[in-house]
Length: 280
Image 1 (tube, rainbow, N blue to C red):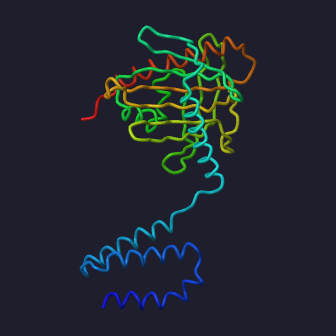
Image 2: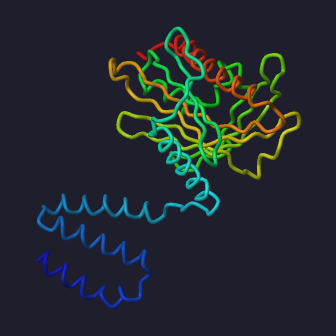
Image 3: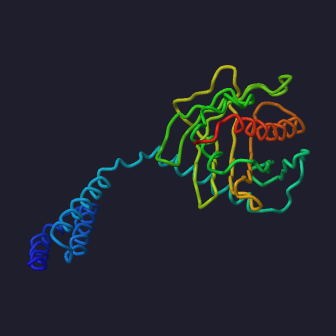
């Protein structure tokens, strides 16, 4: 009886199928596939499975697609991640800028079309998941524990992985470098046990240049968190930094400020994680 019903349904729907749009055809084919798949099951199981699958299919069809602007942000975020991974994968020609007593170090290299980039390498006594939660999920709290940051604000979220942010950086000690701000698109990804937070400057109509701040540019930039090979409960923390601070500044000052900013960030992050109670 049930196979005959399938044939009858297929025959009735065939002439209508030819006049359907691509999305409608896909939906009908998917439903027919699921009906055939559960044809051998008992009546109650078959009915429940069809209802569940139909509900899931309907929710997918009704999902709101990204706008053209949103898709451009998603594309920029993926581009920042791909460029960052490419840079970090090349281990050649990195020069040491600073090495701390605890082993923290900043390296640099000059790249065509990008300029000088900096790479912080440290080991932190925290798991990648805890650090990811603090740096991504609690991103807007960064100004509470990092004195080099005045404020981080999420302007827009696009899906689960992409966001547009506005960061306000404090002026450096002695006002060598005045306050800067950045509008960035960020892409947060997990690949196995490794976490990424990549970004680059973007344009956002809702955040024009701010009075008293120079609009600087960054990117590609990326923080990579992976379990330390010697102790998986700790994290190998790598931060690729590429910034154009704008304005007139000697290169020697820029190099010194950016290297020290990275070293300071590592210590501020350590202090922050030590003050957060471990989850029960």
